[in-house]
Length: 120
Image (cartoon, rainbow, N blue to C red; front, top):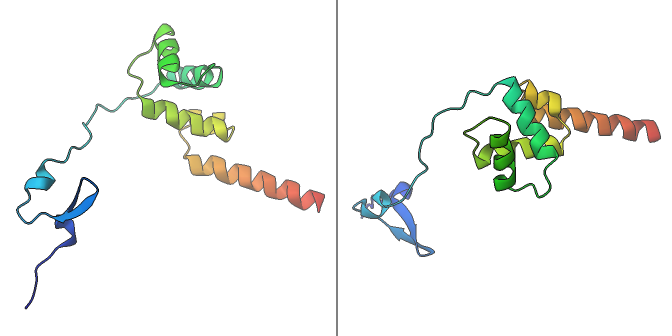
């Protein structure tokens, strides 16, 4: 007997994997709301980087409050988390020039490798 089970029809309900043959359970799952794309200016990016770098707690509410005080708006938590990653790698120029985070990581890795080679 041939079965027509499809892996895409399995849904997790209360921690258990359940086969949803009718699609009713899958329809109830929530997804993220689409938001408008924010077109960042260099001034906004600079302000966000500086505010995040100088924040006391690093919380979104504190950073958002200071971002609004500086005359900007539409800040979301994802923006703050992204700039925190650039700060972690000391990649201000990469952030302001819209370079991918991998460029900053590669640059840091190369710097560390050259320091290790010099000491060995």
